[in-house]
Amino acid sequence: MCVPRTHLPVRVVTANQCGVCGDVYDSQDGRCDCIPKPPGAYAIGSGHWPGVSKLIEEMGEVNQVLGKILGTGGDRSHWDGSDLILRLQEELGDVLAAIAFVQWFNDLDPEAIADRRYQKLALFKEWHKAGNKLPPTQSEE
Image (cartoon, rainbow, N blue to C red; front, side, top):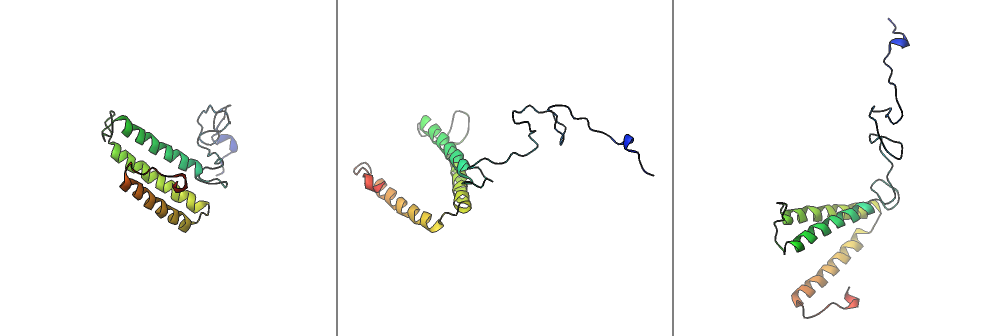
């Protein structure tokens, strides 16, 4: 038996009510949160330097944790009860993931990056060994 159209449930959509999920939304771009927004330039998923904004964000989070370590005088325990060493490890891992993403999706040469990494690491080790005796020169930076 065929059901007449008049007996089918009808979803009445009002202004600012999503036609997909039915939620009422209040956004300036006129779209509900259930509808994905296209990525902006530099974001993961974009075609223009994808992942760069994520890398910057993750580096900022490392800076925040390092600032907390400085603020505690080097103590690993923060006033909020968190372990700053664990937080730093997590954030450094996030930065390394973001670096790998940017390298991969922007066709950057991994060998050139690795070569530079090892050159810079050797220089940092020299500076560390010398302590405060030898300040880095402009050409070493």
